[in-house]
Image (cartoon, rainbow, N blue to C red; front, top):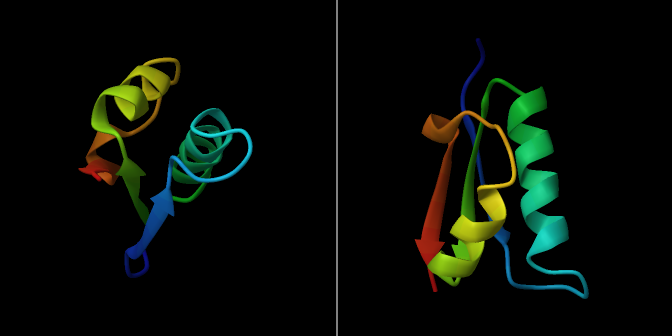
Length: 65
């Protein structure tokens, strides 16, 4: 496995937030094994959206903002 790529995503930004940013982040970590994503936003809202998906929880973190 190559070096871990860390990405911060504004989960609350955009017209269809948090649904679309969270969906994209989940798709990304499920596709790329060397990816770690920080989802930045309101913790309770992001957690609720993440609960809809299956993903490697050890490669995604919510950053309260």
